[in-house]
Image (cartoon, rainbow, N blue to C red; front, side, top):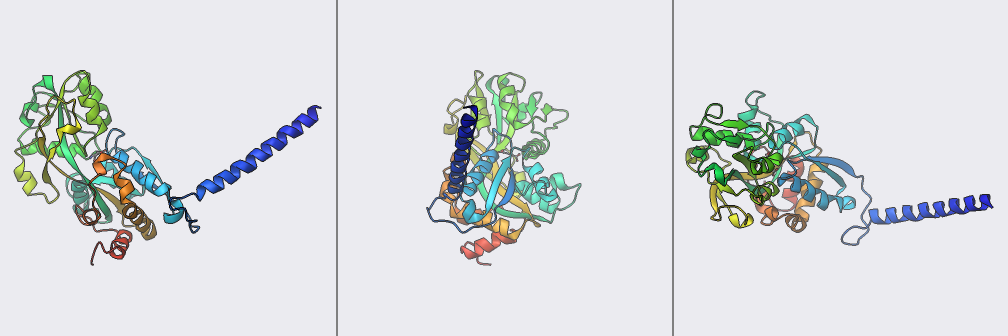
Length: 341
Ligand code: GLU
């Protein structure tokens, strides 16, 4: 009797395994468009993004969504990881730790030219660009109670300037320098990850924080939605710095995106584009497929986050790219008529 029961269980398990295997095979070839894709070797790639409360992390999610649903067509399987941000991503792409990095256009320029954080290492001429994405704004968030209404009011306050490896930190330091504020002597500067800033501001352990980010950003929704009233502070008086840098542009932060903030009029500041970078050594086929997948499915990518809603293919293939465009991306841009070279 016992033996019969055992055989019965065994048969059931085998039937179960057979069905599961068939379902898996079917779902692997169930791709949008319905057509059975040509078999293609799938390459695993990693994308370095930013903190989980920023927009870079959403870029990673959107790239994964678009590509992994179409592995058969483009041959790429994407995984993405949280990271410290622009500076970390550029260095990680160059050292081969990740395949693709999200970074600010100003950091891309500086790395390629050997400026800013790359002064010590020298120009990283092996950096390559793929495309630009949406604009980011240098954003100063302060508790209402701190009385901070301009950048000069930061004197004597506890301010998160951004963690090492982020793109934010360089922007905060540049703004302070342009306005004659010494971050060592004139204020209590912190180097905390952006993901922690909102809570620290709400807890009263920070008076303000800088964050270079696209809008709306989860970190700023969180910072402005707490018990303590929080405002976004204008960054002005830096015209000379903007004029001497090809990648900066004046912009405003639309406060309708943060309805719980203490100030509701749009806030003037400056910003730059977000870009995607790789190393010169990245495989031409990989970069070609990634670029093609993004551009051929731009509608879906746009719909992944409000910050991506206005992306335009012509601008993405042209603006904010100070490192040479990678040969794989160039191949796609020529094929698609996006570049005439
Ligand atoms: N701009 C920031 C940085 O480079 C990241 C912003 C984000 O994660 O959206 O570190």
